[in-house]
Image 1 (cartoon, rainbow, N blue to C red):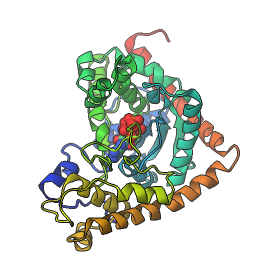
Image 2: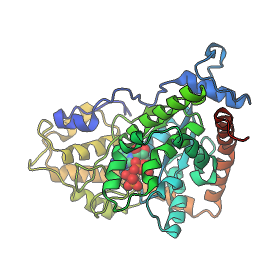
Image 3: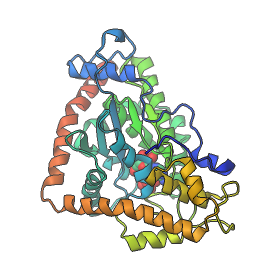
Image 4: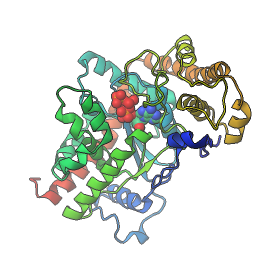
Length: 387
Ligand code: AQP
């Protein structure tokens, strides 16, 4: 299926699915740097010199990919279409690390028992989506202490002004009476997650693109102060589905932590619930699909259908132009259910196998910890810390 195409949905749609300058679609922005770093990890010489003498490096080395999700609520179709689906798609082309970022989740209070359960659930969701644990490392952030260690070192090279400018920080802080420092520092921890592994590509949804820009800024600042140390990673966004909007309010991003029963379709919602949520989705005052005048709710439904099914723009136009909204919603609901039912079946099988998830997570952490620890070692040496 061709996922690389955009449905030309008129001027308002361009706001949802515009071409993003500076972002590439699952191709490395600086592959030579990544290859250099990976090469050095594999050869035990950890002097990462990402722009020096690369011509002799073996070009067969795979670029490393890192991405993660917070176990902060029920994963929804936005998380799936914006990130998880693409992880599965690229897992054979790169050396992939997929993380459950529990340290990020605690930037807002989480019930400890629920958090523990969600970490396991998220690992099962990664596997149910098709992530192959033989091919990729699936691990929990707090199981590798180097994440928190590097985050502190990077905090010390990051101006507060950079963090205060982050859109997500401003939005989350506006909802709190007392703003925890973790909400401000969140993007530094995210930078540490990525830079620890010298990742060349970070596949995320559009809401994380600004944090990726910041990661690049932090990496470049560190490199210029202490010498070339980190690969400067590239962002990778899907062409369709990079920003799925709330079904109850299509001006807001679909979000795990949003309240409202009709806001999101969770990946584990039963078919009846999925149908109800989609049938109640906010549209606009038109009776039927008219691409020149469609509001954000209709464009969002079309984006969900296209991102799940992989239809081309022409197929989308032929199928939906002139269709009444009731029928559009029915077709979107059936498309979502058709994809989520087998997914949920796999989820049940995975969670029914005693010890399997724990084994996958242990193996993932054991595989990646040496890489992370070596990065921390180099950073400590570069900064003059005690080693
Ligand atoms: N609405 C979305 N559309 C497309 N992609 C999305 N992502 C999140 N929301 C959408 C992508 O999913 C990945 C995991 O996100 P996260 O767990 O790091 O948290 P987030 O980006 O803050 O997502 P949420 O769902 O809104 O969670 P809460 O409410 O806990 O903050 C990322 O790649 C993200 O881009």
